[in-house]
Image 1 (cartoon, rainbow, N blue to C red):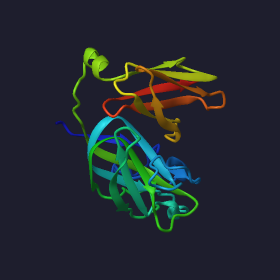
Image 2 (cartoon, rainbow, N blue to C red):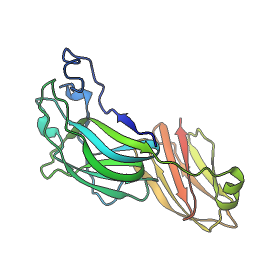
Image 3 (cartoon, one colour):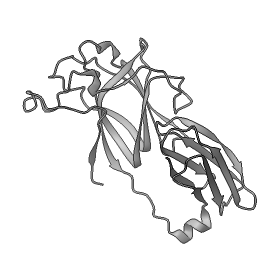
Length: 249
């Protein structure tokens, strides 16, 4: 497979006078970084409410290394993370644990080039979750940037005919939606379908199991108070999995 390094920038990096001598240097401004100052429910129920960031890679990758730039604002170096948990998932429902990693404090100057590349074993992931588990975590936590070294995972192409025979389909109506959202399930091969709905920030809004009647069923939500943006519904019957994007306007 061809190796590719994917950049998931959580900072908008400005050019500076040291760009040629220090090509991986980072800004010292806190507003160029990702910072969380509110504990929120974690997408992985194994963690309590915490500071976390979730990456949706849009397809499955094998990841073997990562590189992190900790928070580099000289007046807020204590907000940098000391320890992080890395979890990964293919469907945002079942999570696997890649390990706990210790981070170095940033230098607080514009020559800071981040930590060395660190090995990690993630055989297949579409979602990568980074959670602050620092023993001395304060009110705020942040990172400047993170890179992953990854390979695309080759998947088997399923034809439409094979899918209709073995899987099930989802249809949202309307989509985009405003006040009411309904999702219809059809051609289910099993009576129980497990589902999870997440908001634009990756927070779980609803999850459960729907029992279909002769291969048909539906879910309905009253969405008038939902914020605008992209929501994702993932469903599986223990055999196949479907995922659709739902747009609130």
